[in-house]
Image (cartoon, rainbow, N blue to C red; front, top):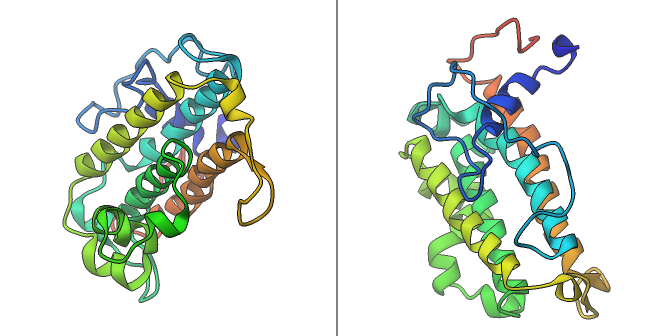
Length: 224
């Protein structure tokens, strides 16, 4: 059935590095060299070092992350900066956007800060992540000229902080309901699952943009 799942090969290649904090594939690794997948990658559920439900959430992040990072390993700076049209976001900007969104939810759930407190024009978060959160014109202007290593490093950095935060908390914290959340009562589990599915959302956009790159060459595995 591999011909029916064009992204499966890239997914498994990227997933090989999912061990401990080294959960993202190295940009310098030989993409064509088979690697032994993590034995429990496809087993969603509790993980050592975390409370049961938090460990299950970690397993979801572990499963999802390589679908984003695997296909971009060989992209050049030109590929990462390429704009499909005047209103498009680049692949590089979308990768940094994923890090920014995860950093945002760290501040919301770990530091108990409101969006109003975090989003201050010219403030710390805005200076570090503003362009990546906003994307659009600001993202097109500020996010460019970087190698793929930069984007992978930022993902690693932010995820490391997420995992460290999860280890310091338990399932009671995860299930705690925020009655004042903008879209209604929402627990921390929902907030963090949103961060995970947010990766899935942008993985689809990145896959589309990859196939629109001037350098793109269809392969038998890609099916297009």
